[in-house]
Length: 170
Image (cartoon, rainbow, N blue to C red; front, side):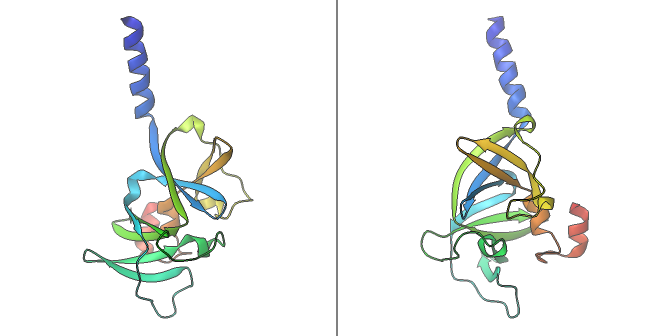
């Protein structure tokens, strides 16, 4: 009986020390972001284009009364082919009290990770600037790149959020 309790305590401890991440694909690379920032996953819908917006900002859409900017990460980071059809996925995120949609090639799975499973990010060799990375995790036959989506979406580089909000996330 004592061994069962110890095993249960260890499992509860490891679950409390772990976080869940939603994995997605951009081109040939696998990425993940903290699932707590995910509002919903949906298919791509037509957007209203914004004049003079960078190419990676596809436009805005009305999501139940919220005007949501849609960012195509495939274009932003030059990975994958930016096609829009019934298979195109948009992940709606809550970032700094705003909703932002990101277009990805596909959503894979939800994974649970502990800090000791996460390797430090490299300084080169991936599409994302290392400032926006939490680390890397080897899973099966590939590496999953953990993205600090809050820092990426709130960055001056994307320019989607007020700079005062961005500074408070740093």
